[in-house]
Length: 186
Image 1 (cartoon, rainbow, N blue to C red):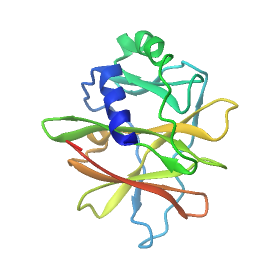
Image 2: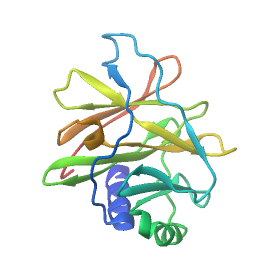
Image 3: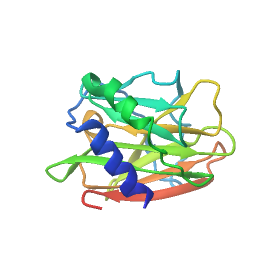
């Protein structure tokens, strides 16, 4: 199962311990209720470049494999990248997303995943179970590489508590591409 593989790889690569950081997130309404205003701007990075998620986590994208990326402690980033060079990556189907979750004491503290899209960059909305609105995840992609990238969302920094979330990827027209439900212990 892609979600389990991503979770396992994320936990192995990072020994995740997540805490809040001052990041900006865009609240959205559930699809069909209120028109949403686009997603977050894409961050384009060089291969192996560390993208700061928060004080405890960075993300890096690798050109080796298929949808291959790491999430790790900043001090362990280089080692995580070297280990990930040997991995295949998420290898998700076209027009879909994967998801991984890190949690502490039953509360989701970091959501990450990969996306693969024939054209463009998806808007990825994350909604906590029972919430009236959602937040956009931050998309990240390799410079000059089309068709795939990653995303992250730090619920702690956004002040969102929960143990279950729905992740929805939509295209530029608002059409749903893929949707995944995640929870601690899945």
